[in-house]
Length: 168
Length: 168
DNA sequence: TAATATTTTCAAAAAATATTGAAAATATCG
DNA sequence: CGATATTTTCAATATTTTTTGAAAATATTA
Image (tube, rainbow over all chains, first blue to last red; front, side, top):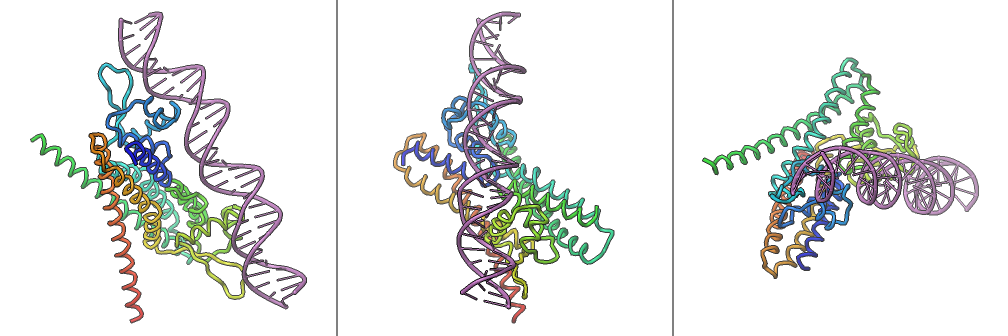
């Protein structure tokens, strides 16, 4: 396999992996493409490389930027906007975890809180059993939330620490 | 909110959460329904509760069984098959992790291995940079794989240990 | 075994999601 | 500012995924 084949293969696989995690294929492919691109790419280059439309490219690039794993790069003397991906895969994983925690885990914890609180008056067997199950899920969700939170925080501190040292 | 409303709410939320994790909504809803059902339910009861067709119910129940988080229960004197969900949420999480590790992480590791190995002849700057990025991802994937593997194994040992103690 | 109940399969339909492409909006240049 | 380049939006379209429902297969009873 030569370099280009290998790159193609990687982009395809990253796309497939993405879809099974609720990230659309194109978005994952653009991410893969930027991850292995030696330089920042502009919209036209991305469209060309992945054979997708301008609208599609634009939309998914924006979403990657929202996730905090791709950023705009401006080149002096060039009107076009270029894009480059965060290359430190650990940072990428942390950003994704942080986002998913915020978008999915936190809302779930809120819903469970509501469900539980408003139902605690009656105390028949069925209600008790329900509250029991929900409480167990709540406990688990909170543990997961706090574990992830800790991991993310530890990582941010480490990063800040390293950065500060560099400038000290 | 009364018990039934709370149950409805939970089923809906679990369904939404599921979809953002690449699990289809109905599958997640059936799982939620069984999680909070006081007794095992049969196909007709599930169809009725979630307003879905027989085919849909059958398909998604089977998938939940494949994931190892729902099991068939037979009631003496009743021809119908009943279904009940694993109620220990920690066990559920472990099963899901184990499955996803097997279905997604392991194949990704294999692909990366291939991509990397076949490209190591040429050593121009671009190839080197590509191999660098890929290696970083590989390292990360292997760490995640091993961490998850460890977690799952620890849990299985704990379970076996507890179980053995009970019968000793 | 035949009659009946139950489950499974799967082609077709529906619903959800992703993509296109061209018009509108915005930015940049001289 | 006007001309031109670039990006964004979004209704229409295409694709993918999910769901239905009825026929086929399987299981159970007497």
